[in-house]
Structures are given as C-alpha cells and as structure tokens.
Amino acid sequence: MTARRSERDDVAATMERLGRDARTAARSLVLASSDAKNAALKAAAAAVRAASSEILDANARDVAEAKSGGATSAFLDRLALDAKRVESIAKSVEDVSTLPDPVGQADKAWTQPNGLRFERVRVPLGVIGIIFESRPNVTADAGALCLKSGNAAILRAGSESFHSSSAIAACLAEGLRAAGLLEAAIQLVPTKDRAAVGAMLAMQGVIDVIVPRGGKSLIARVQAESRVPVIAHLDGLCHTYVDGTADLAMARQVTLNAKMRRTGVCGATETLLVDRRCAATHLKPILDDLTATGCEIRGCAETRALDPRARPASEADWSAEYLDAILSVRIVGGVEEAIDHIRRYGSQHTDAIVTEDKATAERFLQQIDSAIVLWNASTQFADGGEFGFGAEIGISTGKLHARGPVGAEHLTSWKYVVRGTGQTRP
Image (cartoon, helix red, strand yellow):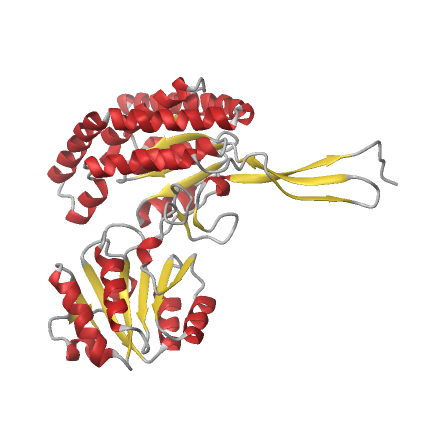
C-alpha cells in the first residue's frame, strides 16, 4: 500500500510539473512568430526523417510487447510503423508548417454608430491535453497542430505505443530547440501509469481542453470523469450506401477502398447498405471484390440468399465498429430506409452514398447528420490531411466548437478586440 501511494504521489508530482511548464510555454507561444513556429515544425520533420531507424526500433519493441499480450491483427496494423509510415509522419508535420497561421486572424470587423471599432480575432485555446492509445502518429500530428495554433500540448500515449511515441516526441523537442522555442510546448507524459490519465482529467485551470483518441472505454471514461472541456472523437461506425442508380464500376471501387484500404482506421466503412433495386446486379460483384481481399461478410437474410458465402448478421453487427476485415451488409428498400438505418445505428462520424441520381444524393447529404457525408467517394477520406488541414488531432463527432477533422484552425477560439476614442456608455 505504501509503495502504491508513493507511485501515485510520483505521478501527481510529474503531472503538476508538466502542467506548470505547459502553462509557461502556452504564454510564450502567444508571442511566438509564425516564422518561429514553422521553423520548429520543419526542423521536427527533418529530425523524424533522420531518426527513422530509431523510431522503427522503438516501434518494433511496442509491436513485440503487443504481440506477446495477444493483440489482434487490426490492433497491430494501427500500431505498426514502417519506413513509408515514418515518412508520412514527417510529411504531415512538414505540411502543417505550410498552412496559414490561424492565430491573430480577424474574420470579422465592424464599426458601431458610436465609433467603436470591433474585431473578432482568433486566439489559442491554451494548453491542450491529448490522451491516445495505439497510434504513434498521433504524437506528431497532435503536437504539430497544437504548436501551429499557438497551444501547448500535453500528450499521454497509451502503454501500447509508449516507446514509439517517445521516439517521435524527442524529434518534436529537437525541432522546438532548433527554433528557440520552449521544449515544454510539446510534452509527452513520461510514464505508462494509468493514474496519469486521471490526473489530466482533474487538471481544471491548467489544461484548457482534453482530446481523447481511442476506443469506447477510453472515451466513456474521459466524458464521465473529466473536469476539463472535452472534444470527443467517438467510434467510427461508418456506412456506405449503394443506391439503385449507382454505377457498378464506381460502386465496386468505392466500397472496396472504403472497407479494405485500411481496416483499422476510424473512417473505414463497417456497414454496407445496398438498394434492393440493384442488389441482383451489384451485390455479388461488390462482395467478390471484398472476399478476394480477405474480408468476412456478415449479411442479412436477403444478402445471404444472393450470396451464400455471407455469414448471418446479428443485431449486434449493425452497431459494430470492427476495425478489422469484417463487413456487415444489409439490403434496404431505397434511400429513406438507408437513412433510417444510419440514424438508428450510426455514430455520426462518416457516411457515404454512391449514386448517379443528384436528387437522391442531395437528400442523403442533407438528412444524414454526421460530421462528414460524401457522395461518390470513399469514407476513408475522413482524414484531416485529405481535407487540406495538413493533419488532424481527431474527428470530432460532437456538435459544439469543432466538428469533423480537427485541424489547427479548430484549436483556436475567439476574442473581441474593441478600439475606441474615449467613448463612454450612457
């Protein structure tokens, strides 16, 4: 008991120090120039490239530990890095450096009849806490976006990606040093102890916003316990609906990519809905493509009648975020039934329609209340880089402040600057 209390005390002291240093760094970043922030990001990207072998060695250690713990293949895909993925991490940081600096930008200005001049100006949120699990790239993406938007970041990596994230965080620190900025602008929590998560959630007045990136249990805990405002990244229960007028070649191409490009990302399609009008001609070719790449199909009774390879889908399958090579398939009676299904089972993350009928597409785009809706495009475009944001800190499924891919601009708030000439209020 005494040893455990000592560990908790150590974690508390560590988090207090990180928070104090982050507040100091956040104040200094308010004064940092765009050139300095961009120089830090470019230097960090160069450091990632230079340290590629060290990052891959650290990642191999994480992967080996995950395998010994019985991790699934889908989990390992989210965790594992290779030379191409390390280069993608470096490029994302570099891309963020080329984006416009949102800090200090005034999007509105007006003058009242009394002569007061008003401006609405973007300002950083302050200190952002990011809690994530298995994706090492979040270290770089979150750190880069926070720096670009003038925020200090406290990053808490999951134990699964701790070694990889530490190696990447060292590169970010190198970039900050090179640009003459405080290293405390981006800090990685230096412990795997889960008590650090609880400490972060209680750091009201120190951390301004918490962003959780992970599974349902992590999100639920953060939303239940946090005394700090939360930008939630909920599960990606994404749908692709193939309408009766869909071009078959396009439907095959989009569906295969939406599911199988990477099965472990939050934008992967988990349920395919097919209009009964085209099921006889479209369903089997689409499922042929999927099964040929190793995808397991779980279908409704109509689906199984058209393709006996499909396993029976249970009620739970319609609510499942597999993050694996598994797809639930349902035949529906048109766009309205597809919309009803998505409203009932979806997570308001990302949903797509494939159709040649513009009116049907517009009905779907208007009535599906998800953060991202697409027409004739793969759900795997649910990614901040694909939106031109350079990277993302997550896909927000909430409806306040930020929604959809959260980029640098979305990590700012507003203040109103008012200039007068001696006016007083009567």
